[in-house]
Length: 229
Image (cartoon, rainbow, N blue to C red; front, side, top):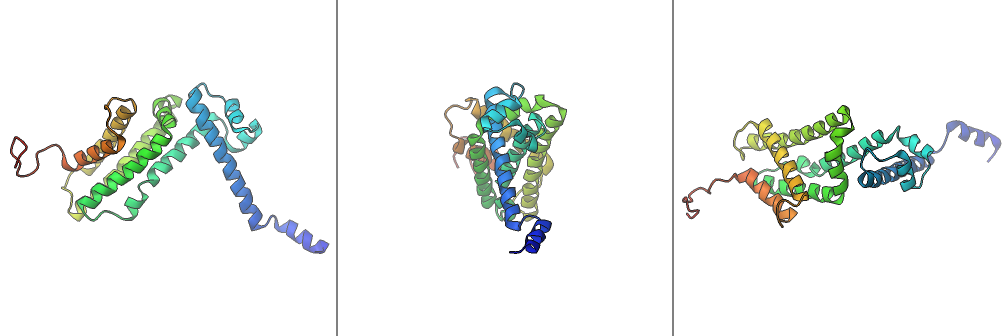
């Protein structure tokens, strides 16, 4: 290779392979910092945690941290965003293949919520930290939390609207019902995490809650007041 070829390559910049390798390395380093921040925040709490704690946990220098994040608030928000996208991703299958019957709707709901529960259980300490300390970070972060709840409610409403249009759900004020479903879900999750629901397992809790949403608490058609047909 002569000097002309070398100079031409230098002017063109790094190869596509090199560029993608650099992007992967940067992405991996950012994820390592996020994982370290999650460990520190859950151990120390948001307000007590320091950037120096995060870089020590990650085995990195502060200069590396500031190449990716401005401060600890930004890394906390990035952790929140990562969790939100993971949660919403659990409903992608249901969104891509809308249920065609009430049975499919029920089973798809149970499956999606079970996946969310597994995700939340894996990161339980971080989720509880976000719920408890998130509103105390600042007004902007409190708004981000509210927007997350709204996104879940909007998703629930879209499924309800589809079911009503398809004729396998009764007409209702879907926006109101969706808000109620999301609120019930978050309340029950906190009660379960705090050990206030006895020894009920999470899978049974999810099925019981979904069945209540689909069937209510009235007696089945044809049943007497004693519960027998």
